[in-house]
Length: 179
Image (cartoon, rainbow, N blue to C red; front, side):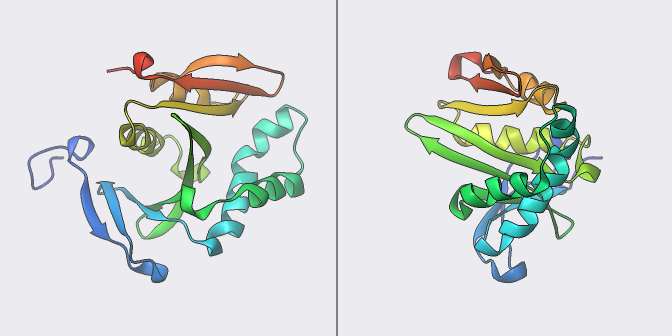
């Protein structure tokens, strides 16, 4: 159904909204009426580590690598609030994405959505916005072998760079962008 500007939600321009819940008053981009970003806070680390453990569990168990404590510790050791955005839907934190610049490359290091939010197009919208932030930069990430998330990355122009028994390392260069 078209919004009041006459465009469907998927085509609306980015808007800016002030997010004041939980003491965060930074300006955030609104992608659609369905979700927004807010900047991560240091106090977000624990629930984010829990979400990571939940989202990765099935794939890591399939690979014989699941250890909840290790999954959480690895996240907490590398957590950088300044590189992490929280995905908020209906006033509730439902996911996160962390992007780190490394020279001319941007690493998408953590990208997790609650299982109940998966399959609704939110992940594709979020990834599209991340890529649009720096369209001329290469983007790298790694995904677990056999993960359904790999299809999302391929749809957005990522290609396999290398892989091992556990991880698939992918890259999206400016020349590999899909229109």
